[in-house]
Length: 332
Image 1 (cartoon, rainbow, N blue to C red):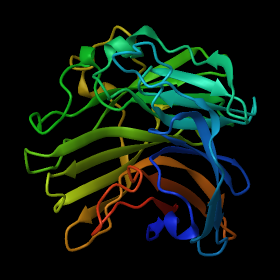
Image 2: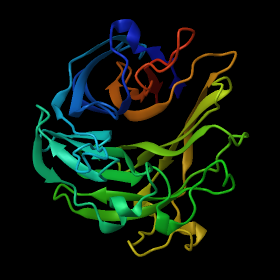
Image 3: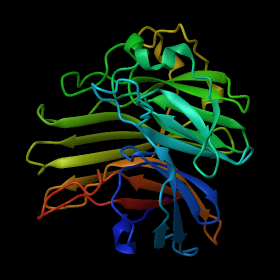
């Protein structure tokens, strides 16, 4: 296992954005989604990875593909704004599925960014009225060997108990990992428990949840746990990323009516830490809010890479310091 230094893709001329999801298409081409883009769709990034070292050598992008969204306002309560968070390329249909946190839908798009009208049949328990606001769909992944999509909500559903935050630091988020088949219907579902948050302070912007997952050929899932804390003065901000391996098929399924705060401990998936790292705003100014994850290319020596992409909030900051969009390569 090797974690390479994160690379600022702005140095290749890629404009600042709000990258929240990434999926491989073919060769060096990837599709990414931006959770604040006015285009309901995606854009392509071409990411060149050195086949010997795994280092990023170049990144180029194309303008978004899709249609202009209408954001919800008081004067316009009816909206098509989706808040695109996760994406997954399905090679069986040559289409891209995108999860929306605002509407709690996972819709299909053709390669020109046009909705096909099909979508995953999200069960009632995962629909918008059952989630804690702004803690719905982010993670989305598809595996061409198992023919399964996987998703989860970012944090605990209302029916499953308290959500971890700065006031409930002892609470572990309890999540439902939900699968879907190529028929778009929901399949097996499993219980997953996050680590407790580690932020020490009580005042600031705090995010704790699962923003991304990665489905592997053998049925294994890699789950990204993210905790980000940003105080008002910014100094002291951190984003901690932990990647865990779980094997759902070895565990007991749960049902829609199951209440996760009431189940026994052995029902939750046993997880194995793959790696963890932290970025900061302190004496080290390398803060990166990672939200997207996907498989990268295999290197010449046969080792598999994973690509992580961060959300800079469109290069948020001031004249002294502003956030950057990074890609981080992990070599298994």
